[in-house]
Image 1 (tube, one colour):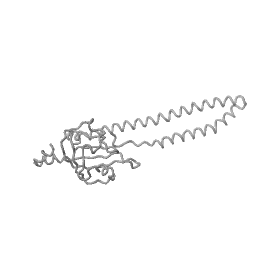
Image 2 (spheres, helix red, strand yellow):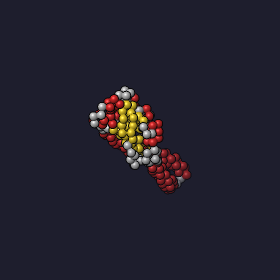
Image 3 (cartoon, helix red, strand yellow):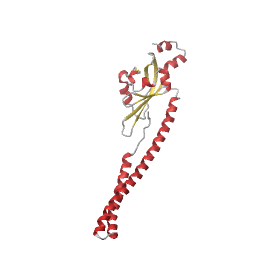
Image 4 (cartoon, one colour):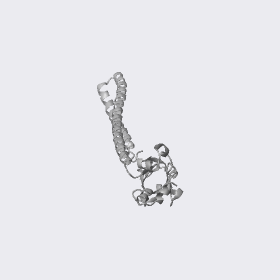
Length: 218
């Protein structure tokens, strides 16, 4: 799971390499024939010089391509390392979060659930990963349209809390109050929907409501 996907300016890098080749090729053609004509005025030597010049151009461009590619790949590897370290740090923070947290992909399927969510609902990674949201929770307000409601949320504007009914791995029922945020890429395409939940059963038990224990076992 990558909550903050890297943004590579591959078009800019490709254009930069193409312009470097265009500029160096233009200079080579412009000055190499002139210098070759000065150094080797005899026709026979000039023809042989053209052959060597062509091989020199191939070797030079190959070396230039290697240097440019190596520089770009080195920067990309460093960026990937930074992203992996940042993602590992961010994931460790999510794992110690006391509130259940759920991350959905662009299709409404579960991409990540933190430890609090899995412990509360008695699920494992194998039973959660890739499942649609409707498999484990519904909204009493939106019912089957829950995913349609979540994916249409506006980025940056916090929606009101949403009441959910959750189905646990051991076939119990839990009630939660959820808050959702969405993440979109630069083109506006939906990337993730992130939800944090508050266990209402736990709050009711803490308040001394005996009915909450019965509802959790339904």
